[in-house]
Image 1 (tube, chains in turn red, orange):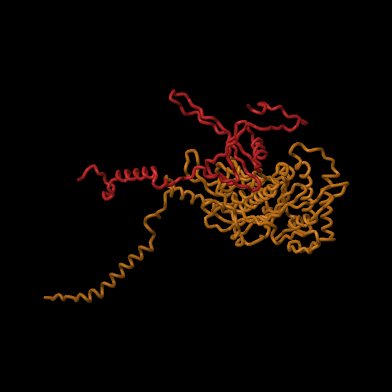
Image 2 (image 1 turned 120 degrees about the horizontal axis):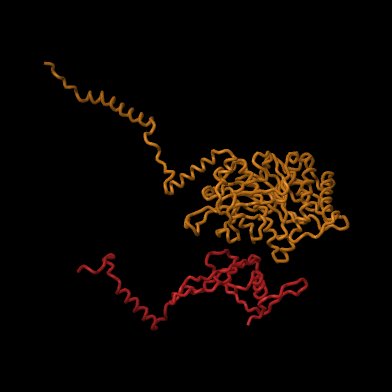
Length: 154
Length: 433
């Protein structure tokens, strides 16, 4: 259940500061699609959050010094159709570009590194891999023919 | 019967062949001396090819070169295309680095040697510009005391004698500091007129318009019928300084053009839209503050007012105090580049005809209490891709940190008036060739 009112009471002079404890908003840090300067971090944020909300969220909960926040709403496509020819909507989401203050930078780490691990010696995987490599080698055409097919000839 | 004497071959060969040889050689040299029968082989002008496009550009460039200054300006700014609108007073973070890249400017902290920042203790003036007719020693000179009292009067008039209501939202600077700066500028200029004859022939503009249009860098077009092609990035600055002083002669340069070769300009490989900077298409303007036939076509000093949005207190409330200096530098850079670039264009220098003598201007940016002084030397106007390939020249910006002029006004007295700021103001205005 949301821990905040869906419609905020209008602020009048003299009202106490609006405070939200334990918000049910969750930010997702994403790798940007195109190259961005090192002090800009890209987040996917819930649609209902504003720039001030994002700034306060990061500063108060995560102690991240935030310089500026810029947001945009990404339209999720409604073009694809399913097997019943109905349009399938992909959800819209809000993207926030957060510029860090105090000269801090952030580089997105490589979450999916290339793995060329060799299987352990004498194990089943190693024998399987060797067998597959031999099969592939057998399937290859004779290199002495120089790329000419083997359909004809002696 | 007449015997036909067989002439020996040798005699024939030796006698006649040299003549034949000469004749043939003569024929060849005559052919060389005559006009070629066919016209020179140059690319077509109207074909749909890259060489035809290059030839069209060449024709345009030579047409602009041959035109008088008024037509040059109109030919360069004729075609409207999408361009980045650069605002000198911007909210963007680290705008000074971006602007340095756009204008190929190197920043040098401190002022050039001509101006000495005199500390509180008494020290002799060493500025050559102020030397004649009377050197201004720091204490007890009549002229300096007059100027000091002028400054005090200007401050008191706005903040003590005149009762002002609270300004409307975000109009505090324009309401409180604007008139003070106007009085200061006009008062100082007119009183220093007897020491600097240049100021007598100068023209003070109040709230002028200064515009400049240039191209720098290249991008690929992302969308549209021209997708995939290279396109120059166009910029336009429309600046409204608080006031400026224009003079009839050019100010002397601070350092030689060769000294700028070693300066470093930050290189940013991201598109300007990341900054954030936005593109629009409208009239391309190049304007110094007065139209072309005006005799006061060279710039002396500009005065800028820090807007309410970027005021010190508001930045401190948003925990962005480190951006104050960056904002001031970006403002000075953009404004002075615009002004000097427009001055250079008015003299007929443009992208393909680079400037022969550097253009120099000064600026003072203030928010009422804090003053920052900047000097700019424009060494090159050739910033587009074709002309920037082997152009080692860079533009230079000198600047100070912000210095406090006075603490406050209490009981009809200005408390904590600093004289070094007034010294610098006077030195700036006394600068002359």
